[in-house]
Structures are given as structure tokens and as C-alpha cells.
Image (tube, rainbow, N blue to C red; front, side, top):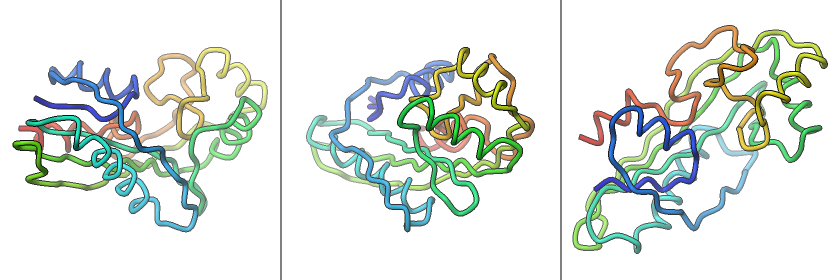
Amino acid sequence: MIYLASTSPRRKTLLTKAGVRFRVIRPRYHEKHRRRMLPSRLVMMHARMKAESCLGKIKEGLILSADTLVYCKGKIIGKPKNLKDAARILGRLQGNWHMVYTGIALFRVEDGRLKKRDVFYVKTKVLIKKLSPIAIRSYFKKVNPLDKAGAYAIQSPHGGIIEKVRGSFTNAVGLPLEKVIPRLK
């Protein structure tokens, strides 16, 4: 059995559409943004800690956890605190390339004990179109930015604010399926 240690609706949707059968378990770990840490190391640490927080919850199976963040101009960008913060974040990202990092942890559990651990990250380069403040407000009427790293939803059919993507599209959504699915098998 595969256990998704995440409450992200986007990760659940990606796995379901890929035909993966899984159960959700809620991790007992809350991310701590360490601004001086490399984004690749930070997302891997968060994914690992989420998976570790779920180890005592299952006897057999595979725990899958992930953490996603946005990195632009030397700064880690997480989820916005409110709509004003979301507008500031999207205003900073618009017209600029930025990186989306996702850390993934896969833990194999047998007889209630950790047998194997695989922790890695994937990064995707994204360019958001140039947007006016009015366009940003209009976008927020269609897409809730508050639960999304970088204050945007790359997968949303509303708004069309993405100009280019280099790398894994599903990574920018929150889970790089082309790297995860082969490892699940």
C-alpha cells in the first residue's frame, strides 16, 4: 500500500489521475523556512521530516511525502500570508524566470520498521507573463493564491499567466510524476 503523507489536494489529484492507489495520512511535521538553506536541501529536509513523522502510523507499505517551494532572485518564496502578500509575491515573479523545487521522500516500511529511504528533489524553471496590478487582482478572483507556493496555480485553466515551463510540469504543480511513478514500482 502507498501512503501519501500530504494533505495537498494537488498531489492527491496528480496521483489519482496517474492511476495510483493510495491512502492519505496526515504528517505531524510543519515546515520551518530556513531562509539561508539551499532550496534543494530545504525541500528534501521537509519531505524527509514529513515522512519520518508518519513512520509510527503504518506497519507495511510505502510512505510518499513531498514539499514544494518557489525560488526567485536568491530568495525562497513560500505560501502567501494574505492577499496583499500574494499580490506582492506575484508582482515580484511576473516577467521573471523562477525555479520551483519539490523534495520527495519515499520510505519503505516493513514490520513497522523503516527498511529503505529515498530522498531527492526535482526543479522546474517557470516564466510568468508580465502582469499589471489589475491583471493580478483579476487572477486572484479566479484562483485562490493563499494555499500555493508562489501565489499561483500553474495547473489552473483560469488566467493563463504562465508563459513558459522548462522541465517537469507536474513538479511545478507539486509532485514530479515522471520521477515518482517509476520509483513507486
